[in-house]
Length: 295
Length: 230
Ligand code: SF4
Image: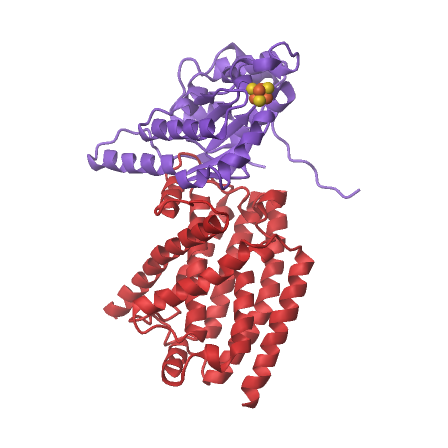
């Protein structure tokens, strides 16, 4: 029991630190692509501390506060559902379907929070964010379904064990892996699919009225989302990790791919995003599903 | 619509814990290394910011980033001459930024009117209307000058000297008087500056005066717009 509690605390804590490192990696990749030096090593930490240290913390009401807590809390809960080397948290008792539900909570929390800000930009941003969720969740669910079918289980711990015995999912279902990577791009809200942040157009959308600790929490949330995406993909396709080192190398590599693609692209419009996410990854996913089910 | 509550962390209470100063120092250090700027591109000086931010001079290596809304920003960059109409927007923007906030006036025009000195339509000295932390003079200053000005500001923040945002609360009457002289007696902003001054414990003898008395006379409560479909 005690060990479980320690794991439940430790897993989000690790996620936080690694997530901040991923945030740094994202900005470094952007800098390298644009031939800049980029931010210093502790930049994400400085940003978070600064935001929490602001003297004015403007709240727009109860739901604003609660929404942010829901958004960050959703990810904190999700971290305990994904097994990492040495720790399984409650991953062996639940399954990937629960995880899908938990991964939708942050978007809804942000929608609540942004809704109370009553800023038109925030409303547009939220409606776009939920549209985006609709777009990437369909390929994502197909991928999850296909992989669960292939491994014969929805339990993430067993999936990792299967892959460590029989080889990575990436090689057994490459089409699904491609679809998953495509959906990841949408899930992270990175450039071609960045419709809901769009700083130059709707002034960072849902974040428009957030300042101080609210924006700080959203930075924390973003770092969680990067980490979750990285380790979920690693767990599904890259055989999880035996040690922390190979696990983190895989997770960072996974996150680096969408980042590198992102900074080459401008932004798609909403219908272009829906079009591309419902066409290519869904086609590849369905094809991959057919292959998996036949063989 | 109720008034938006502004909460502070009681930062001005007396500190008794000896470690509090270490903590304050740490926060100040982080603050100085993470500056999000809202560049209010009023005049020609704005053209020097893109090279300062992109590959050639790369402000991000100092932790300086552009931001798009006043709520998220720390620095208000006023880049160039300020027309009377623009100044109203600058003041609205400034008052919405969360403290601690810093104002940088780039270009000679913000220092003393520059080459628009004789213009009827520009505000001459920015520091009359807003508490300016730092001027970067030049017509227009090169990106090197902008970056070195930013470094100066970082130094000021680190040593706790960039506190002019408190001045806006302490001497609000003075700033408001200048604003009223320019915009007329009916000038008001949606932000309750006097209330905020109370909240921060910065309400001093010069916060209120004849100008704030005038403001309180003409001030109209904020009413939300009625939503209707045409
Ligand atoms: S100082 Fe020169 S460059 Fe700057 S706003 Fe004035 S006229 Fe333009």
